[in-house]
Image (cartoon, rainbow, N blue to C red; front, side, top):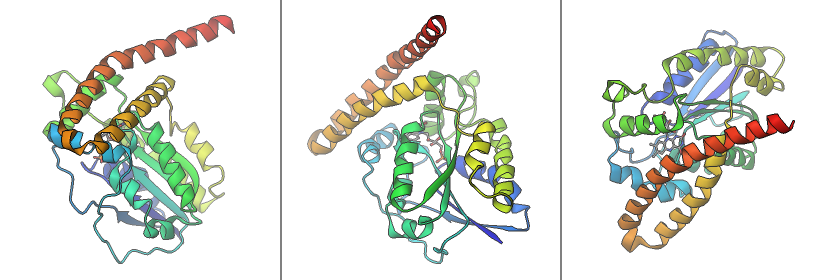
Amino acid sequence: MKKVRVIYYTQTGQLKQLLDSLLGPLAEMSGVSTEYREVKPAVAYPFPWTRKAFLNVFPETFLEAPISLQEQPGHDQGGCDLVVLAFQPWYLSPSPPISTFLKTPEAGRMINRSPVLTVIGSRNMWQRSYERVKEMVEFQGGHLVGNIAFFDRAPNLVSVVTLAYWMFTGKKDCFLGMFPKPGVSEADIAGASRFGQAIGAALTGNGLDALEDTLRKLGAAETNDSLARLENRAKRIFNLWAEGIIKRPNIRQFLLNIFYVELIVGLIILSPLTALWGRLMKLFKKLSG
Ligand SMILES: Cc1cc2nc3c(=O)[nH]c(=O)nc-3n(C[C@H](O)[C@H](O)[C@H](O)COP(=O)(O)O)c2cc1C
């Protein structure tokens, strides 16, 4: 019997929906058992968010300050054949429940010496948070065997608007009746099961060595160079703001409000510029190659 342990946090339920579709094929296999460890903050984050609450989590989230988690005794913490670690980026870092959990002794016991497959449910800027999670998993003695990243396929600025609409109203429908639905599309959620079939076949067949390659061929972690560049720029700016805000608690709210304006203006200006730069570089390479 192959044992799969799924560790996850989800606020709106989107990531659990993705996991249910992804791991559906494993549930139907007699040789595989799956157990879930849901990570929950001691105090749930508000949903829908207020603008103030959404901004207020920024500095500590980006800097990965630990939060209090709900105790959940009774989970098997021994070795297993595969750990599926599912998370979402918040402000380019892994969300606080996951960044906190990954530093606990329990995570060490669950991950140490085990193969780990990461699953991400994001807007579209997930690459830095993945690098951070990779480091934390390796620090706890786990070894990565693949990554599956789900994201919103709408253009970057459109997905910023629809994510804000979803987060601030709690509604996952079409903003003004003309924007696309926010988040990972229903088609991508349904299509996640193709990865599950590959995972099941690897677990019960030839092993996990070639899994990463197989998943990549199935389109598991499509990267986007211009978004990666945008993340790199944003990472440096976020770091300055997060450090600066934490050091000045007496004017925290004031600084958060300025950060908010810079975030919006930065996105509106930087996002199309980096995309344009990426296209020009591609064209230049084509012409010179
Ligand atoms: C505070 C906050 C910050 C977020 N920052 C990012 C981000 O930096 N990059 C990104 O792709 N998505 C970001 N998202 C979207 C989430 O990664 C995720 O897709 C969404 O919250 C739904 O996930 P859920 O399964 O937890 O409900 C953010 C969401 C929240 C609430």
